Image 1 (tube, rainbow, N blue to C red):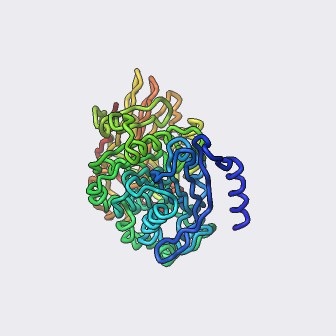
Image 2: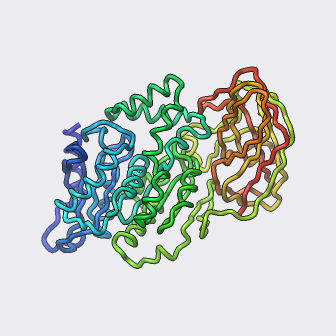
Length: 497
């Protein structure tokens, strides 16, 4: 591993070049060992600007994603150093690859490492301790938000493909996101050293006791630290994908609404980390371009007009230009009335939410949605409701809300609600979905459920359709095969731009 990192360093040094005296603005890169919390060694690429004086320079700290080494942000770091004069430290999170320690799932030591890296950069890399920003993707993004709550020196944060509520992300409506958990566990074992917290969480998951993992969420979720972030006045940019299969966008939108300082929300097509992936490598990318401008304004203090722009920027999931709002959209809405039906539980149908990382990437890069043929959905196993046609088309924007009257025959049943755009031949494109856990055999209850938010352009002549079944391969289902679910009069409210 050490030999490969040396080769990477040589390659990067060759590409970037060694600075000459009085050279034009550029950057240098070095590979460093930084002492984290408890003396744990963190391996880091340190990118420093050249040709613009002796500093001190504004500082950006970037913790790596789950299972990804420190080279993750080096391309973006070199660009930020050369074009904007930042010192950037891209380091491997503790417990992974060649950094020391154990994986603690963004616990106190991992979050404290961010502050230790800031200390090191001020002392050793000509960094300005009064101009500090943090950024990351996925695991690095969650750390960035948590660090912003703990360290007042952090003026701005950019969190991409992040979580703000860990339990809500991996356990939505008390339903385990099985594919996400399996991917995270496999990657953690392959590239890192799980600590006791992760080992205990995995044991609980394997034993069907995932609810025991929930108490660790609060301390590892920025949603529980919103007051500290607001008190610090941190400028927060959030960027996620509509189809993020690990950290779905609803929790991000809610968190954004509670921020009181400078803030920006960017949601765009794709799956986990796909929208900003190429930007981290230094390639042209509209998300990272916004990140750079965000830091220029709130770390460097440049008057670049970012604060005068509309803060909520949403790109339709099925194609189109960015739509910009002053606040989370909550305008006009259409309500679809849902009549009563009875279905049998425990069998899958052709309706499902797709495969994490793959389905969302196909939507984001190629505009290929997760599809369904509505005529082939078994009406004995799923409730199917169709709305009126949108003869002139429509744009959905916001959070669809389902008010569902339901009576299960089993003590526990898992429902999966899917909202589709359906064309004249009955072929549907998945717009959004949500799992719903129902308990209480024989008890009629009314549930208010928010599907994941969306911006989606409905084609002229198409209609919306809602499908609810009881099995989805993405999730752990608790439906009992052969039991029944009876739906009473219900409704679906869909917001429009």
